[in-house]
Length: 254
Ligand code: BTN
Image 1 (cartoon, rainbow, N blue to C red):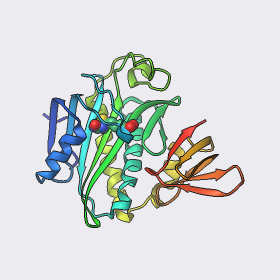
Image 2 (image 1 turned 30 degrees about the vertical axis):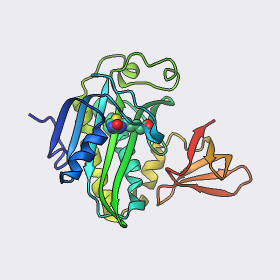
Image 3 (image 1 turned 60 degrees about the vertical axis):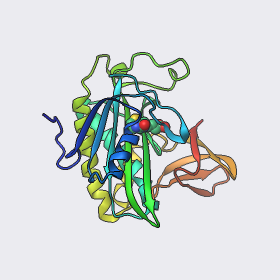
Image 4 (image 1 turned 45 degrees about the vertical axis):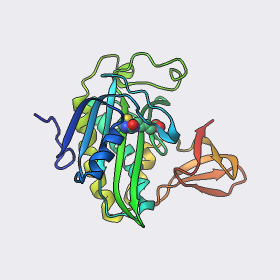
């Protein structure tokens, strides 16, 4: 029996003991015609993917490795905002399920005390200038006790923060329920207008000094918050404003 409380998200639900990557599995299902709301959850990923071709460690039972198939009537440029929508769903879902406050590190991480607890990877398939499908993949560290040495200073898990082991199902259900609500609201306008205030309150980078690694030149500034398109507004040291588009540049806290 499904423990999901969402209305349509997870209507088709695949739970796997092991897969290469839930994003890959969701993409394969989407290519076979899987409907919007199809959800894939795995206990372990053998080739979990992070952003920029990085590997995402996904050991058995340690976390939530899940992906959603979406078929929004949006232009491809709008699809990157689904990462931001998922970020809000993760922060709200974690709060609802276990009462822990996390924040969004724009554009695709959730952090607790500055340490990464969740990563989001959105991938899409397009045809001419329309979206065939989008896969939103969410990885949440739940019961991880020991991170590899290189990750330990910057990563955390729900159980490390709360000091007890946790069940994953209630967190999966809460994040799915929250995603469904935010996604529905997002589709009404197709931009972040309605969410700017709420998103910016969840933003860990807000009013913080950041370093923008732009291929055209690295610069420092203060992150002010997102705009309607989901870009991060950065006030540069010379006082001018830059709008940082997600996916094109990376932003580091200093
Ligand atoms: C990142 O922070 O770089 C993004 C990490 C995304 C990880 C999740 S786990 C579920 C889904 N399947 C994958 O292969 N990746 C995403």
